[in-house]
Amino acid sequence: MALSVDTLRMLGCASTATLTTQLFKRGLRNVFVQGVRRMSRPGPSLVGEAFTLRYIPAREDLDVLSVFEDPEHPQRKAIETVPAGQVLVMDCRRDARAASGGSILITRLKVRGVAGIVTDGGLRDSEAIAAMDFSVFGAGGSAPLNLAVHHAVDLNVPIGCGGVAVFPGDVIIGDGEGVVVVPRHLADEVARDAAEQETMERFVIQEVAGGRPLPGTYPPNAETLARYRQWREQREGSREASREQAADTDPRHVAASARRPTTQRPTPDGTSGVEASKRPRREQRDKQSR
Image 1 (cartoon, rainbow, N blue to C red):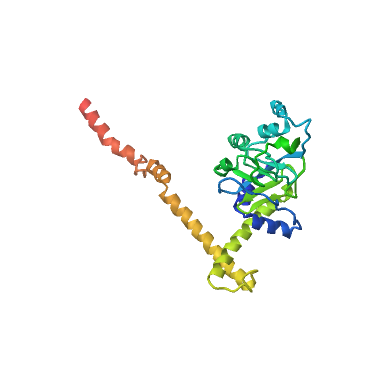
Image 2: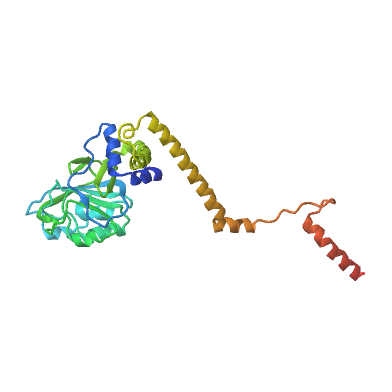
């Protein structure tokens, strides 16, 4: 079953710091991909389900340029088959001596509607990648082509990326801090609790900025939690009022109201006001015809 739009939205709005805290609460400590950073232009967080590609060390008699002529080559097949909205995650054994991809392959992923790419190997064309409005996370720039170090073998199998286990369908979230892996079966509850933590921490930041000391504020005691609940109620009330005001001033709403037919009250003889206004004109025509 596909993840809900709400779950993906909430995960995409949460920082990787918040998500690692939520996973820590559930006993998961090794969820942050090591040695990987955003290599593309800063933008919204990356979020999507994992589609995996596994590399093993290259062997000179097998890894020659002609292998790319075969559309079934695992690397090329991965680029052409990862579903739109998912994230291509590559296991390069944390070896960045050669590129696991470059600007041409990444451009193809972008055109196909893929959410992004994560690799614990290197990427070539890193200057071009740095200008892309597409989520690219890797271990850094590396000019040599992948065949020099990597041999692609498997698609959509469990892998390791940056020391973290990644299973197909796990949720990948990346931001300016790095990449976190959320196990698929925990995605809904982590998304919900992460959204609540983000809201709470916005309040805590306001409290600290206003001069509150850390004791009793972070983590919050009963008094701070009471202020938080009041702040949240006021905040939600303001949002509701803003939505109602926006609806009242929406041109589409105003136009629809203007198009509604005017209700005419019936006259004593049972005819509508419109019919009553037409009666004198009909009677005048009848007199003239006589």
